[in-house]
Length: 271
Length: 256
Figure (cartoon, rainbow over the protein chains, first blue to last red):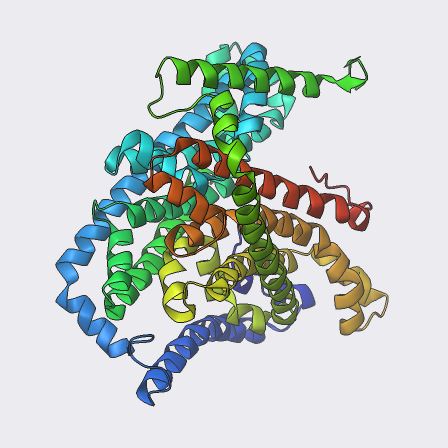
């Protein structure tokens, strides 16, 4: 679970190589990783430098950078408002999903009523809710909040219910033998023990939150990085389009890594 | 555990049916009493859509073909690329940044670039779906290759299996279950990705159908379109699951 980068899973220990080889590869592997990013940038630079592709389709890295510096305040405030929507929707949707999963675990009746309903609504693609979000909640903050929360809720509730079902029974027996209340068992035994298992689902929920927010912002006129991207496209300002997309990629990777680090810190007791 | 059965069907079927009826009743009630604004009752939706079944099916057909093409191209390339890049740890290190990005990046942000580069026709939508499916299967397969239990590899090399044979006969079967899991995710994601691309620029497809109805405030076609895309996603997922069930019958990991 822990290691997500193949680079960290080097085969060196597997084959029992001498120690200096291990140190060498731990230096070389990150360089190899960086080289693929450098390669992409190099190809991009060369394509624009020798005018293989017209700048309307692919602006040069330099011009994108210049455009970013020019419109820095604007773009950064847009990504800020997007992040606010993403965070709010993610917390609402995934929090609600976790709550419903715990209620379902606490009570058989709740589970029997909610599970089939969730099974029916779950296959509706979250993306398809975009027109309804606009219809029901308008083009402001609440529409995007609904869109993000809808997407995050289903993935989290399904993931967390599954994890709760798989909590080892003797954890619960031990806690209840020590006199922990039912609620106490859920808060202090079940919730911590499912965290390592739902972390993957929360990462997926975060990507969904980004996607839903950007989709919502494409269709509305309330700022956000999606607006930056779509306006760059609509007004033929490809530099702005690239600024928006590259910034989105960087921010999404950083948020994902923060989530992974935070999750690992929360579950540092697990091996 | 023996399941209790009633009229030859399991408990989950009956609870599902009850939930479906309850949802339909709630939907009808909410529409009749205006609990949810602009909602049409199920009967009204069927009535309104009944004279445009042809248009609905035609647009669903467009989305279906685009989705299948994108899914095939994207996940095919994803699996092949992963098998090529999973070969040794230097190649895996080279692929680490795209994997990192593939897990985190919201692909919908890339739709405008695809429309800019490939126009509003079929090419851009199919390629966009293919990109989404590529990353899903590539990331899943690369992760699976990196986490093949070392015991398998030790056992193979202790028995004198060559690296090529190890890759073909140990690694490939070991990752097949994960790859099928990735394919199922890709199959359910392909059509919604197409839908999102069609929202922004298309002359056909369910996304076009829904967004046109939204602009005209025609709620019935919107609902019909959303149900249509859900059915496509379910059918694709079921097809992948059933067609690959035999391949992974040996695995103890349950595929649901």
